Structure formats: C-alpha cells, structure tokens
Length: 556
Image (cartoon, rainbow, N blue to C red; front, side, top):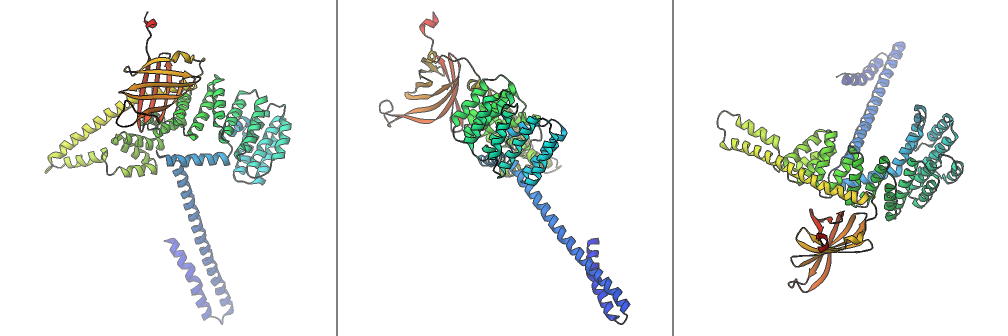
C-alpha cells in the first residue's frame, strides 16, 4: 500500500506544483520556491525509477541464482539410469580438470600447519578459482612472508606456479627452476607431485608421468609415495595404457599392509574400473575397500549404484539400506532404493521410498513417483480411501472390508518377499566378497597344474579342465550340447568368456558349427577341489559350482 502511495505522490507532486507555480508567475520568490519543489518531485520520481530498476535487477539475479542452485542440485541427484550417471561422471571429470585434484587437496592438507597459513592458502585457492592473477600474487606473497621454513617455501612456490599454469600461464621454466631448488630436500616428492598434477590437468600425461617417476625415485615417505603411485597410474590410464595403470595399483596394493594406504589404492582401482565400464571388478574393489571402512557413506552409495547398474538389485537394496541407516535423509539413496524395489516388483516399498526422497526435495523422485500413479502400490492412499469408506454408517459396500483385508495380506506378502530377497542378497554378497578376495588379496603362487583333470559341474555333469600358462579352459556337456569357459587366471580370480557349441539344425549331435561366444563370466578358485563361476544371462545371474572328481588313489 505504501509503495503505491509513494508512487502517486512522486508522480503528482511535480505536476500539481508545476501548475500552481505557473498560476503565480508574478510572484517571483514564490515561483522560485515552487520551482524548487517541482524539481524535488522530479528527483523523487527519478529516485523511485532507479529503485524499481535496481529491485528488478536484484530479483532477476536472485531468480537466476536460485535457478543455478536448482540446476546444481539436479546434477547432484542421481537417478538409476546410465544417462544420469554419465552426467555426474562428466561433471566430476570437469571438476578434476579445472580444480586441484583430490590428491592435491590431500597434499595441501599436509602443508597447512596453523590457522594463519590455512587462511593464506585459502586466499590463494579462492583467487585461483576466480582466475584472478593479481589476487593470486598477493595471496602467494602473504603466504611466503608468513613461512619461515625454506623447504616449505619451495613447496608453496611449486603450488603457486602450478595453479598459474592451470589458468593459462606458461610456468615451464619456473618448474625447472623449482625442481632444481627442491632436489635433495624433504619436499622433493611433494613438489614433483604438484608439478605432475599441473601437466595432468592439461592432458600432458607423458610429461606428468616423468615427474611422478622422478618423485618416486627419491621419495621414502609412505603418504607422498602413495600420491605419486596413484598419480602415475592415473596418467597411464588416461593416456590409454590401462594395463600398466592396473598393474601399478595392484602391485602397490599388494606391497603394503597399511589399511589406509590399501583403502586409497582400492578406491582408485574402483574409479578406473568404473571409467573402464568393468563393473564386476569395480564392485570387487569397493567390497575390499568397505572391509576397511564399512561405514564410508560415499563408498556405500557407489557400491549400491554399481550393483544396481549390474542388475543385482537385491544387493543394491542391501547397501542402500545400510547407507540410509547411517544417514536417514540421504535423498538420492532413498530415490534409488525406490528404483531397485520397483525392479523386484516390491511396489509398496518402491512408492514409500520415492515419497521419502521427494519430501527431501529430490525432484527426480517426484518424476519416478509420477510414473507409478497408474500402478498398484499406494499403500497410504489405498488405506485412507478404504478406511474413509468403511467409516460411513450406512451403505458401505461389502467389498470395502474385503479389500482392506486384501491390502493387509498384500503388505504381509511384500514384507515376506522383501525378507526373502534380502536373505538371497546376503548369500550373493558372500560370493562377491570371495570374488573380491580372490582378485585383490595377495597369496602365495597357486600351483595351477593341480587343477588340471576331471571335475563335475553342479554334481551332475562331467567336465574337464585344461591349463596352459595362465589360460584355463573348462569343457563340459549338458543334455548332448557342448559348452566351455575360457579365460585368464589371476591370483585365484577367473576372468572368462562363456561359449556354447553351435549346431546345424536339426542334427544336434553330429554337425557342429563351432563354439559361439555367449558373454562374460567371472569366478574364483575357492580351494584346490572347488571352483565357483557366475555368468550373466541378460538380467539373470547363473551360478556354476565345479567339484574335483576324486581319483581312485584319493579313496585309498
């Protein structure tokens, strides 16, 4: 109301006063007084116009800020689709390119020794984030003025020129000078790591590798050694030498018993397997990492998501539930729980988790929930409607009471089905954990020759194992049709291809056309007399157990 009153006053004042002033032109003093008032009115009008323009601009900026925040939140929300995951992966890769790598952040946390230095370093990083070179220079000079240890000054210098390099400055000569200064000091490994990260951020992986390797030659500190090894593996992976990247990480994993170091190597392995679309090995690495930190929320989400991508929704539910037990308001986990429950046709649980996620502002859950409006599964709504109908004193249809009973029975059945699925998931998880141990736990070399010979599949079908070098072939016949697994043995882990014999129809037993590859299989040697293998047939998982046939001499 006051706004409109002010507007009217601002408009009318100059007009009224102007008219009155014109009617009294003879009185010059009076005229000047009113002319002043007239211009005051004009000034008020201009001020109000400026106020309106500023307000519109502020509202526009605020709206855009909220829209940006909304888009940012949307990116952070994970739906259980490969497209959404791809968006997140691309966003993470962009952040890794434009910002200091997580390993750098770990390194920076070592640099910080007190609140003052932390503030100075934050100023430098904030200025770098804003691409403000002048502020970067001022913050760097402040940081160096506060530092009294010469080796740390060298490390700060390497960080400063590394950040400049990442925003387009040519720091090559500075890097060479800093390398010479750092040689023989305790920060040499850190400096090599920082410079390597700079080159890595601009995809100069060969140069990055050379700096990582220089650092590893002279570095004895375990933490810095770990950064360098993981960095070297990452540069190899990103430059296309994935086999060497995996070799470096697995070798480093097997060379340490320190749980924190093992955790970091397993995390990095999981990241690379994910980028390589090797979901089974990603899951194995995450399972081993969770043995070290079973309540790590980030890993619990990652492994649940990986199981979901692998169509192992029972295990996805098991891990999403573990995460929600730790953080009940984890809206992305709640949304994805709904997706996995839906795939298992547990619709009451599906809708319940979508609703919980939506209440926490997960709009993806709202989209998923909307898709279910045509399906059964709305327990709350169904019960409310039925109870409301049943509360009427007269004219209650006989089916209302029966439907309430049916609803209760459906809920009971779904609860029983959920418990059954979770029980199956725990058995499935045991296979996954044994598989992970077979792949990543260091054991003494297994004598592969002892596996050669006759075995029996699922206590029914005769089979035979042949081994040459690290290549294993398992042949068997089932209902007159020939099958085989063939692939590599690493440690106790089996990475296999699954084949079926192709026959010229209809003479199955005679005219063989040769083996056709039907997909991938994985497994592990449980002991010298037992092998467990799993294949994925579309969305179905099939398990095979091979037991050694006891020779006559074994029975004597």
